[in-house]
Image (cartoon, rainbow, N blue to C red; front, side):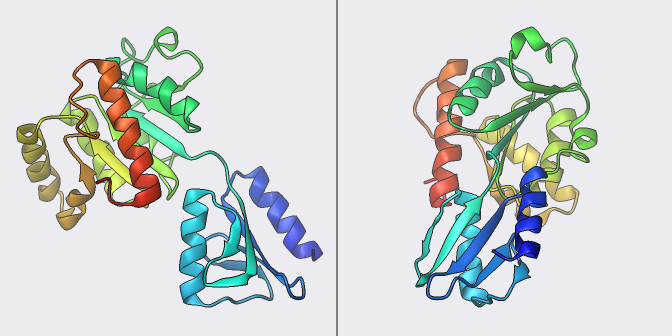
Length: 231
C-alpha cells in the first residue's frame, strides 16, 4: 500500500469517516473511496462507483459484483440512529437499536424526558433538534426517527432529515396526523421530499405497546437499510 493511501486511510478511520479501499487483485493497484475517489490510481468508472457507494452504506466488503477482479474492503463506523423525542417508545427502541449494532443518539429539548436514568448508556442531547443536527449531521448511514408527536420538535428535525442523505426517515403518528404534517412540511418548500417519510412509522405488526412499536420501527429500519423500499 502506498504511503499516501495508508495515511489518508488512517486519518479517515480516526475521524470515523466511512471509506472503502479498492484493490485490483491482478496487480495490487489501489485507490481510496468515500463516495468519490480520493487517493490512488484506480478509476473503476461511474457505474462501479455507484455500486461501491452502496456497499459503504451496507458495510459490505467483497469482490465487486460487476468486476470480481476488484476487491472492495469497507471501513465504516457503526450505522447511526438519531431518535427525536425521549418518550416511552424511545426508551424501548434505543437499547434494541444498540443491540442491532446502531450508535444511538436521543434528542429532546425537554429535560424532564431526556434523563440519563431513562436512557442508560445512550447519548442524550438535551436541546432543540435543529440545533443538535447542526453538529450531528445525518449521513447515508443514518436512520432518523421522530417520536415526540409534537410538531414544534418533530417538524424542524424532519425538515433537516429530508434534505440529508439519511437512508431512513420515519415519524410517529396516525395517517391523519401525518397528512397534517405533510401539509406543514410542504409549506416549507420540501415538495416531493416528504414522500421519503415512513409514516405511520414501522412495519404493521399489529402491536400497540411501546416495546412492540419499537420492534416494528427497528424491523422497518433494517429492512430499508438492506432492501431500500421498506415493503
